[in-house]
Length: 298
Image (tube, rainbow, N blue to C red; front, side, top):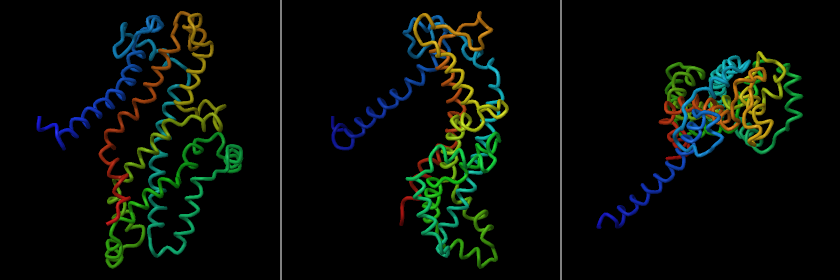
């Protein structure tokens, strides 16, 4: 029983606690997956936990038969890729400028950036700004407004502040200009924090639907996956979740195909989560390092 004293007892308690947290986190995901793969008629009976009673792909087939879903998926992928690349690059450039000790206006610009975290113009001024910039009914309304994010800039600048300034001085002595220093020296060293920011931006772009509703809701060619899934969910659950309305057709003219709101909600959740879930493992190893390394000063 000696291992239950001191560090041994702490390790046992720690492992037990982390196991409980892991199971509590994993169960909802498995439950959503099981319901999405279960027959809609059987789902109404309840009692589905982590394993489907009657396997079917009808819930997913019903969703992907919906009009504009493919267009929305393509637009969501494009906005996620383009928005992430431009967001990382713009945040890194601003952060690099603010990290330079020879930049005279660094304190003023940093203060202005911090203020934007506490004060915003609001919904109506934001819409009016997008209209004046002629971004309504354009794809770039998804990308340009989010290119510069104060929170991301602060994280990247803190990371850059921890890098030795002698690297830039030696590069200047070798004839490198500022952009060469930024691109060839600073950017490779900032891979952990940039991967962290990439995850933040990608998740935000992938999950966004409200900007589609505000700016491009009337243009089916510029719709996004999340917006289309929101409309499917809204149409499916419009009649309520009671037994009398447990089965509804997505497209209206397909009366023979019935789905339950619960099954459709779970299938939509899986369609939303899985793409980001596949990306996260590739960035996870940079996540903790990128969030903590720049905050520690030697």
